[in-house]
Image 1 (tube, helix red, strand yellow):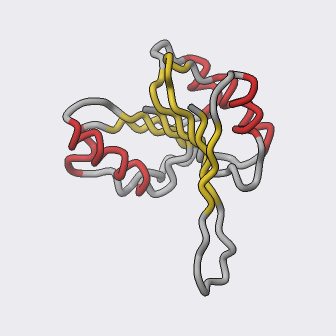
Image 2 (tube, rainbow, N blue to C red; image 1 turned 120 degrees about the horizontal axis):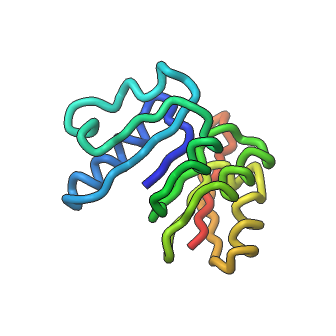
Length: 138
């Protein structure tokens, strides 16, 4: 698994928990901020590799195909498209974007790569935040 945009590392810990429960797999999480990922500790750190650097450069240099990819870094159409173009996906890989409510990059990627596309919309009740959404291409 590869995640771009570690931030605090909460999502990384959720993925790590699933990997630990399944008994196999690794997560690589990439962020430009050297202070990111401070929540990745204890047993989670056993299955998570933190990379500090540019996500596109890192993705272009990866030799191993990725089974699950999550774009959660810089939320511009150009950057998301560049990450989607740089990642080397395994056959049957799942691609996620937590920016699918603000960009159609994953939808376009899904269409070009002949994948199905799903969109899961957040609908907060009685909250100032209108909600975002997560896209999945598979």
